[in-house]
Length: 139
Image (cartoon, rainbow, N blue to C red; front, side):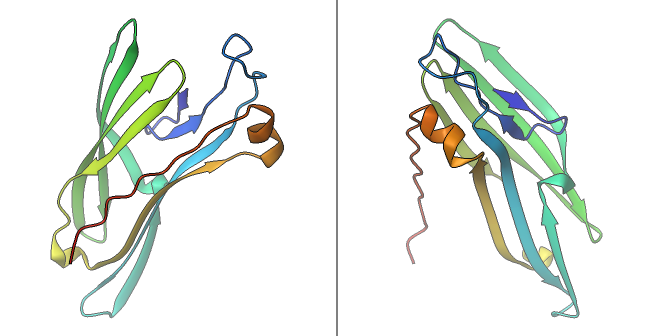
């Protein structure tokens, strides 16, 4: 597992000892945010590059690594923080998603977090299982 300087996941290598071929399968973790300010007069778009690492805590144990990162986002005169918890095990990882509050004045109309994988050849040669679980609020 590897992360950029601002804490975003950008490398996952399955070693030969773990049944892989030592090829990095992760392109990068992506964040996309779109919004409108001043009653739609100003539109904005941001990516994970706008996030900065505010705090990082982790605990390395014999079974797993627990990682909690707090990211800071400042744009268009507003700022917010979000925390993301991750658990890394020998043969899997779990990202708990983020938690935070988006003030309505931010005008967010779209927010998305995703993981982009490298080429299909790299992923398939490692026999990767990928599962995404989405919990949408009930309306």
